[in-house]
Image (cartoon, rainbow, N blue to C red; front, top):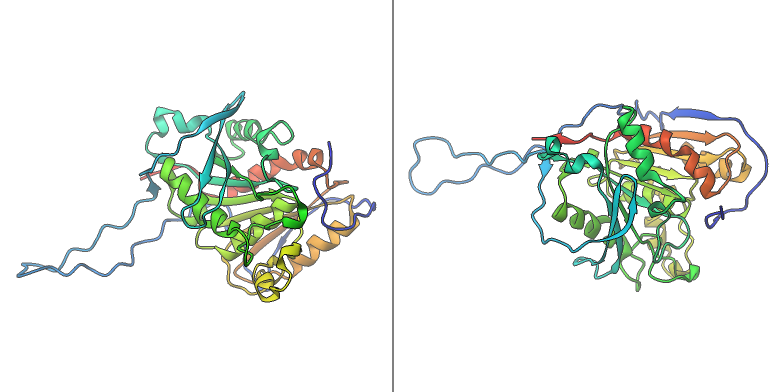
Length: 342
């Protein structure tokens, strides 16, 4: 397999495997596999008009499940897999104005009558490279859908809706949008963090709590996953950056240093503002990558909870990322909510 676009120099030293649960500067323990209850309503009691024989009624607390309320989007079958079709649409976000392709896969349980009233956790996947009209999570390079079904059937994880949006609108690497609202450029950050979740909620049964929303990506997609979770912990509870980088380096940031730093995971993870769970991986066969990821992990401040995994002999290759997927799905199953019914 061809390597995904590398952002940093690569070394050849081989390191052993290590899985470290990092308590990020008095971070506390990981959330484990408990299901997080959904937020209760904080609205004030309604004021009743005229005379009332009792106290005003309180509005009902929102349920755990968000049922699709539309507008319905026209999805077509992009490809067929042994575990169901991967659907695709071209979507214009009403908040960002960005138009781009979005792929969606539904687990077999979604159509099972026994799950008809269940909301499902949503895992958004970001590809490596430019991903301007393709996504490596939708083909046999990273067949995560088949792996997810196998892992769920063995009880090692649970079902997820998988969403796979493009990350850029042009092939030119000098025009990389880095899943951000770069001044003067298409608002890719808004598209990713607001329009895409709204699209999914409008069309599919999802969960209200951020614990039902996770982000994972490889290489360039790793940057997107952890950046968006750190920026929006009220929407996404979990991030898995696979062999990523953490400092925005698109040439489009030139002249906008303050905005660039505001979109830097390297800075945000040390600010202690995001109550999220992170699993950061590095390839053990790449000494430069190991140093980069370990330095990022060491900066984490509470309430961030972060773990580090070093793939034995791993390289910055799609074929090596593929080997980690079953374990990553297991980790996601322990840190995200399972399907839930009200």
